[in-house]
Length: 274
Length: 261
Image 1 (cartoon, rainbow over the protein chains, first blue to last red):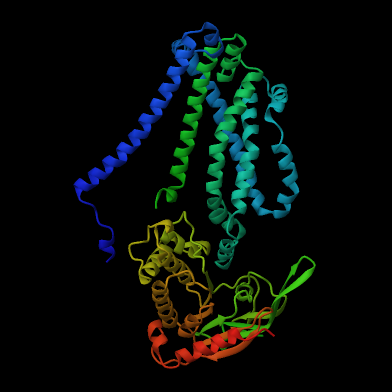
Image 2: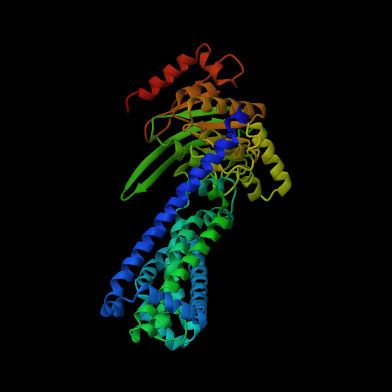
């Protein structure tokens, strides 16, 4: 009976269905490209006729020109690389720190209640206000940017990991207890895996936060990186170059988000089924 | 109390349980006494919200009683009993583990040999009609199959006593009857004891050797039925059709309807 429950459709039928799915996906892509093209076209058209408008808003062709120039002189790659390294280091340090602390708060309700107001207080600090201190403590190089990215990430990571750990079904904890599990076994086999989906939601969110932290750090004081490029071009009223660096920033953000999604699919294979 | 071969697997003596709710005391269980003999299936039925699940949690050592005592094999309960299996209405399967991984959990926690544990878990899945589903994640299984995996997880540690809290309540009638049959066969074939908490009077009568009827909160045993039905006692449809079944059901139903005192 169960053998017949799942039968393969005939080859022709399967091919037809795959084609429908594919054509829908490509229709969406075509629409997205069209939307972008219309937007860029209008922008180009609006700035082409008026020099003052072009000065204030840049034009897609001028932005493209700067992207090509930055590509040729190597600064596009170097700045993206620098900001990318700062972001990734801060992202990793902040998430590891926050997740470990957040998960371990599950161990003691007492400690969790004690530290709760302090965490809320730390979380409410606007990160930009810490930038001058970070520069005084860690200098104007890589470390201060990593510190800024870390600070932007750590409290969010802590709170999401703690929330994930606390959302474990108490009946499931009881089940583990009746099976004779120790608290460490419950933590490792139940709490951590249960919290994974919250932790990954936190990771997806904090990619952007880490990037913001790194760029704020570069705004304050730096000699390289995308934030530095944006800041410098901005103070020279070079709007198209600001946009060019912004395009690189967006590309970096998209790449890092894609990387986290890839990691999530790799580490939570049970979510890809059903 | 001393242990010994004659001591029943489970004895609950004069147990009361109250919760503090703000400044007031909510009394859930009042002076409740019951006994579970070896190889016996005992059901507990009661009006909804009467504290059946609290009773199960006290018996399984998850909650301490306010007063009274719980004995396992004649010894006073300290912590969680080692030879009890625990199963709820929720299957509590871990979504990140396959069916086999879920069944093997209890053996893994007690530190059993890995390949041996997996063999036993696989065999238990086969016995419960889940051959070929060992590598399936719970998310891909139906409700009935998931509950079978949970039953396999409960049985694979070879518990002498099963504590079941409405384990089949969320299943459709057909799945429920089939899994009840399998449970009865597995339990009676190996002389395990079962304490089955349920609100399904027909399930209680068809599965059990005795049915205890509980009162409203604070709950205690108001009546005990010794179920004497002809036939094999592992076929729940046959039990439902047998002579006397309906009389038990009607009588228990009347007890449950009785006005609160």
